[in-house]
Image (cartoon, rainbow, N blue to C red):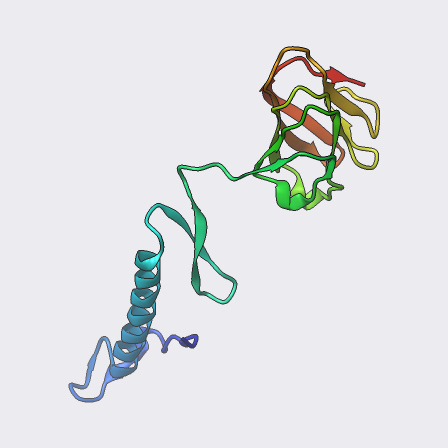
Length: 179
């Protein structure tokens, strides 16, 4: 597929066969090529797995996203983990009977309004540690928030990067201590 250059505006073109103004042969060819490209892209989307998200790549191709709208992307950890910005838009599960630390990623202004949900599934304490001088709710700079609630098997928080340095809690369950 090559990018097609659109012909000159219709009003300035004259069809040489009929000597009348209107859609000329260059326009007919252009429309034909563009509609063929659209057809090809639609066929690729139709060929993707039903229910999956179609992704338009930077080269103009369409790829199967591998995930449907009916599923939330998640990953489960059983050890202390340093998150990256690839964790944004996901549910991050920590499943352990031992105490674990989840280190939030270092962020930049372009990532403001990103979110992630952190879930504690096991019985061990889960500490969420802010990067750099960032805060989580009302924590100190570089502060922490933790859940060490006894008897609760699942606790979670959805965090939104409200500014370059502030993580806000959008919601969650469990008793979380900010410090």
